[in-house]
Image 1 (cartoon, rainbow, N blue to C red):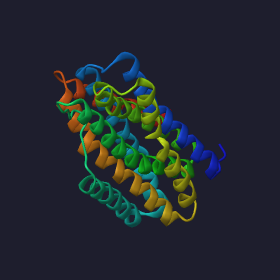
Image 2: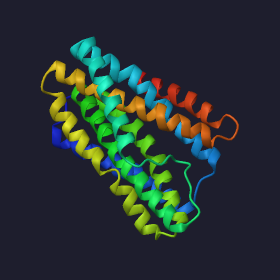
Image 3: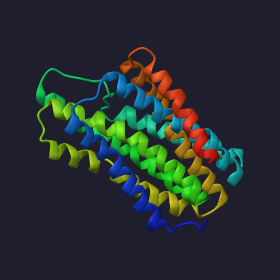
Image 4: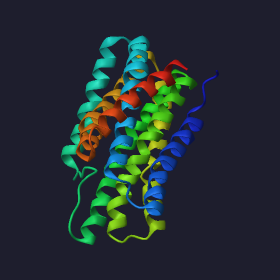
Length: 247
């Protein structure tokens, strides 16, 4: 299948980000906060899919494109930069709560800022994936869309508790997905320059996604878990991701 141009890839990333986080906002605004068990399962499932994509698609493609050296450098850069953002910016995990309504709203907005920043390297993953091939890009787009929905739900929940109008909740959660489109456009441009740059880009995206999964999604899934909901969700996500890669 022919590769897409950078603008088209950027628009796909924009749609994935806005619809993914926005859908989470819609679900929360309409139905209210999901149970901890449901949110734990969804987070685990999305995290499992992301891990399978990283290890089955991103890292092998990075190695094939530019060798082990640039790929490993990219992985460490992606991990370290996202870790630095975590240290610099106020960060609130999915289960954080406060007693006052105004603080709930602030929690949702701060979490939304973190989600928006995280969506940039996720968009880079989409763009780099499409630079490899349409099939790889589609697989990453599906995984990231699944990942973005619980993030949107997590962002919307404290805002809903704080009394924010449902329409504004949906708007804010959708806006948090905009950087995905920017990242996808950059990833498509940079990833197409040279095999070394492509390996660095794919490695960077893999490192960023690994940090998000291991530092946030899995811990939050376990924190919210009812029984082993997060664990079973993660196992199911890994299997689903492998099946998507094979198909």
